[in-house]
Length: 112
Image 1 (cartoon, helix red, strand yellow):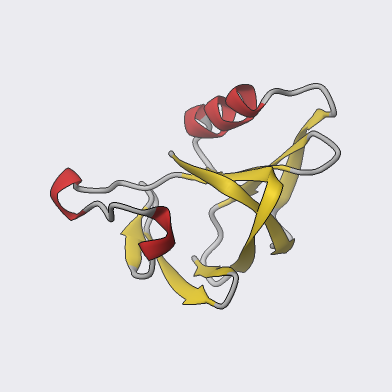
Image 2: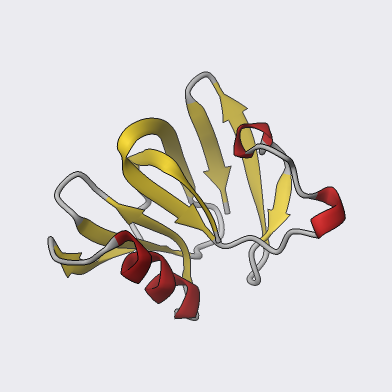
């Protein structure tokens, strides 16, 4: 899982709320990691853990932000792993399929 401070500003319709204000960042991320369908975990400002499940054709817009946390599954080869998450802008494997990351001004557009 790759984790950074950010928020999902255009959520896909295929999401589920896992915790109602009482889930830690670690619990949220670990639960997504263990899930067979979750590709992105998002702990929002209300401390709700949201899972975004893999669904071909969906696009999720993620912006960098101060206190909310976004984490996503990625199968990265250590030799090709970017040194900084801000350099993420390519196609990445998630265990399901390839997700296309497109860098925009303050975040990324992630297309499944």
